Image 1 (tube, rainbow, N blue to C red):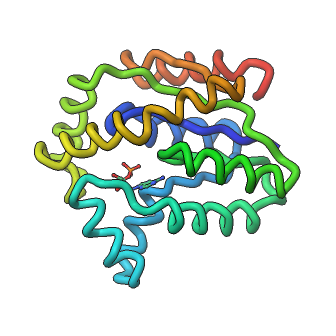
Image 2 (cartoon, helix red, strand yellow; image 1 turned 180 degrees about the vertical axis):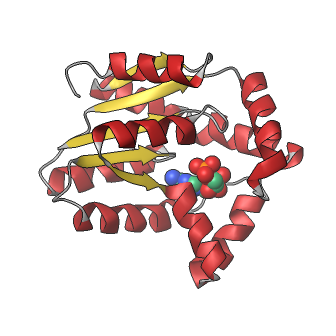
Length: 190
Ligand code: AMP
């Protein structure tokens, strides 16, 4: 069973490359951002709470996120594996994921970091804002999301460097070029 995480700043292209990767490897897709947006659409209590946090450009609490992940992992252990998009986003989430995987007798195979300069991320997000309908895709919130990324999410890369599963992939180029780099970085896994 494969466990792959796609990591990178907001706008690094995680969502775009995830679609290609799940298609190729037939993995269960877990995007915590998508799950939260679905809760917002449904107007659940969790959704109402998450909306405020997302619109403030902040991260939702580790506790909530870890519970969501644990439930999905447990329910899909009969599949080919998982692709995590936008998770883990804090060192505490990475530690919790390790323990969930261990409890279920599986392990992280590759933690892929899409390297994209912040100015290109901002440009991409502002472009996406024209069609995404996402209330957090605006200049002010994007700036806050990048600060949150730098402070809380970037340290997750070191966690996986020590873990030995970290791979950096240049995230600038055409979608096809980047996907090819990802697949090359997974040689031996897929
Ligand atoms: P994304 O779709 O991955 O860009 O996520 C959109 C927003 O959802 C983020 O800016 C956070 O507010 C929240 N979010 C998504 N995933 C996580 C996570 N793993 N931990 C905390 N907050 C998250």
